[in-house]
Length: 188
Image (tube, rainbow, N blue to C red; front, side, top):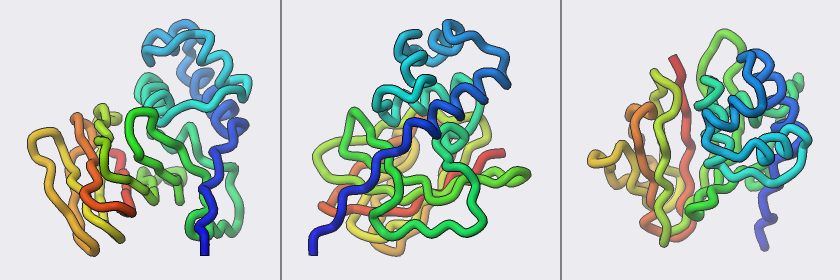
C-alpha cells in the first residue's frame, strides 16, 4: 500500500495568522520583514495567502514576532479534531529532508505544541534558537536520529526520549531511512 503524500499547509491559515500577529505586535510589513531577514515583497505575498513558505521562513517570522511557530500555522479551532497518520498538513525545510506536521497547537493559557516529524538521511536540519524559555522533547517512533543542541547532540532510537533547550541552536540528523519522531515544544 502506497502512503499518501502529506497535505500542504493551507496558506489561508498562515496569511490570517501573520496579519493577526503582526497587527498585535504593532509592526509594519517593512519592520517585520527586516526583523525576520526576509524581503518585504515575500512577507506581503505571504499575507495575501500566496507563495509556499519554507519552515525556515515561518520560524524566522515567529521569532521576529516573539510567538511560537504554531501561532502562525495552527488551523482554526474545531470541537473534535482527528488527523489520520500521514494526512496532517506539513511544512517543509528548504535546507534538509525535514518535514513537520503540527498535530496540536498550544491552547490559551498553556504553552506547548505537538508535532510529528519525518526526516531522511543525507541532510541535517539546523534550527535557529526559538523564543526564550523553549524546551524541546523528542520521542523517536521509527529509525534513528541524532538531535540536540550544537555540541551536545545525542543518538536516539525507537522509544528513546530526550529533552533539551530549544532556545539555543540545535540540530536533527536522520541516521536511518524512514526516521520519525514526536516533538513537543514547551514554551515558558
